[in-house]
Structures are given as C-alpha cells and as structure tokens.
Image (cartoon, rainbow, N blue to C red; front, side, top):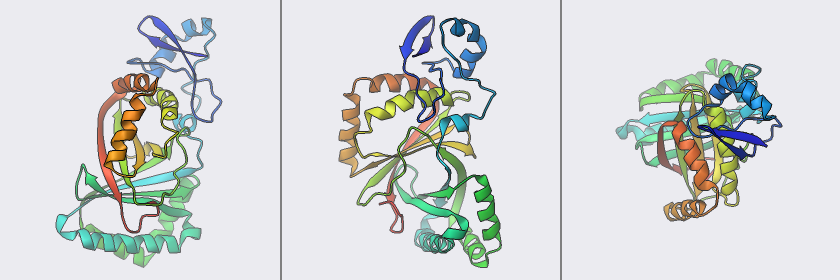
Length: 283
C-alpha cells in the first residue's frame, strides 16, 4: 500500500506502474513525485513507504517495459499538394517495407486529421529494439537513392514537419492493428516537468476503467523531440460511439478521481480526430 500526499492529509492508494514490480510512490494533485522524495523521504520512511530512487535509473525504464521504439511523424501539408504528398508517402512506405527484415521497422498507423489541425498527417512507425536499431536504419536509408529522392520530393509538398521518438507506457495494451472502418482520436498533453511518474501512477489505474472496451489503441511518452509530451490514441467506430464511450467512463467509480488528479499536471492539451489512410496497416 502506498500513500498519496494531499496538503497535510494522507490518502491510501494502490501503487501501480504497469508490469514493473517497483514500489512507486503515488503523489496526488499539485505535488510532484520528485519534490516529495526530496523533502519528505525521512517522514515517509517512518510510515513504511519506500520512495522511488530518482537517480538510480531513467524514468523511461520505469515507465515502459516494451522492447520497441516508435517514431511519430507529424506533417503539415500544403493544401494544393495533398494528392501528390500521399502518393509520395505511399511509395515511401512500400520502399521501407521492402527492406523490413533489414531495417526492423514497420508502419503501425497512418492518418489524416479530420478535426483539429487540418491538412495534417500523422505516421506512427515501430522499430524493434533499441536506438541502435534506429541508427542502423537511418544509416541504410541515407545510402538509398530512391529513399533520398522521395525525401527531397516530399519537401515540396509540406509546410512543416516534426518528429518525436516515443516509448509506449507499460500499462497500456499493445497497439493491435484494427479492421475498419474506424476513426481514431489522439489526445496530446504537455506536462509540467517532473510529473511524468505521477501521471503514470494515476493513469495506470485510470486505464482500467476503459479496458473493457476496444477503444484503447496506444499510449506513449516522448523520449526525443518535444519533451514531457504524452499521446493517448483511442479507436472508435464513429463520433457517436466516441461520445457514448466517454460518457460511460464518467459513470465508472474512480474515473473522476483519475481525471481530477491528472488535470493539475497538464500545461497544455489538445485533441485531434484521425482517419486512417488507404495504406494504413490499422484501419
């Protein structure tokens, strides 16, 4: 049993971080885990609570136990070049998949934004292994003339682009490819620095309120790129089923508590509704 600290009151909670067996301190509301560990370690030890050793290992190892790295590409497309862009990117996907065994890299999902930032595409790639695998793939592709040609050509069709390398949270289910038709929602959060462990402790409990449905697709936190970013991707049949599913979650005891504990950790958040491209492996 762990302890959440809210002001001067103590509250019992269940320590959870996915499949790891680490005794993690769950801290609620506005107090970050690192602050509690620094200022209250002696006090908490008297209660029999083992605090997380912040300096012993990276947070990424505590938060993720998956043996994969994901690359999330965000492309803002020129409105007059949308068809050319997608023809280019589909050729790009075919080229990468033709070298799948060598690169150990594959496309998981490819979407266009239907609500939110329009004229935008998102592509989620999975690398099987460590960043050594990413380095090897980039080295191979840097020498591939067809790949470099597609890359140069694609620049003519874009207004801007961004890449993040992200890790999957251990407590989210594996990203399983879906048969369509579906829509997806990506809810992106920019957290206050130092609050990722607190976020994960609360969401590891929160996700259980929605595991009975098929909508959880993937949950990630950023490793390289914009830091302290979290992305939750949900799958729905349509907008109406999204509304019904979310309203049902609010009727689950405990869901409101998860939301109230995590809201103070957020600096910015936004939601985008996504539609799979014709060549997306998940529909």
